[in-house]
Amino acid sequence: MRHLLRVVVAVLLMALTGCSQQAQREAAQTSQDEATRRQLAEAGDATANMALLAWNAFQCFTFGEMAGEPKGELERLFELGYESGKRFIDAAIRGGITEDEFRRKVPIGLWPIGLQGPTVDFKLGQIYEKSSQDAYDRVVKRDSLGIDLPPEKWEWDKDTHRLRARAEYTIRNCAFLK
Image (cartoon, rainbow, N blue to C red; front, side, top):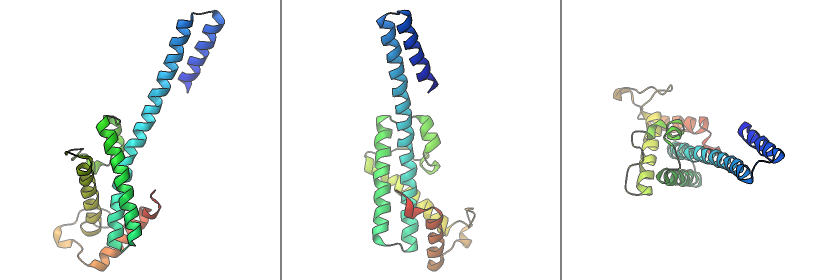
């Protein structure tokens, strides 16, 4: 905002002092370039957020499945994960996400796999697999604080799975993901 104000003031001063039209055009172009850079940065942040939305939607799908949520709700969550993940991957392939945005916004569970594979659906399958495995592990292989348990302490009781998955589904506000 300050930069835009400086440019406007500079254009006004140029007009008042009789500067050349070329200088005025350059000042206007600088203002336009700054606005474009700002829009691209905001778009990159929004696109990087799509990775987080995909991750969360796929996790909620897994929690919902384990908790016995209705089929319609599961389909909604899966579709949300699929569409937002697809937008994220398409943008990443086109270079619409900087390395800094990737580090700041993309879930850490995606860092080891990055975006490897021949097609968007293949890459999206990796995101689904990683996020759903993490959700399953939270219910079965970790304690209530999220600390990994030794295999002999893993929870195998299906009723307990349902209760823990329901808790995760509720805590994460899965019903409200849009």
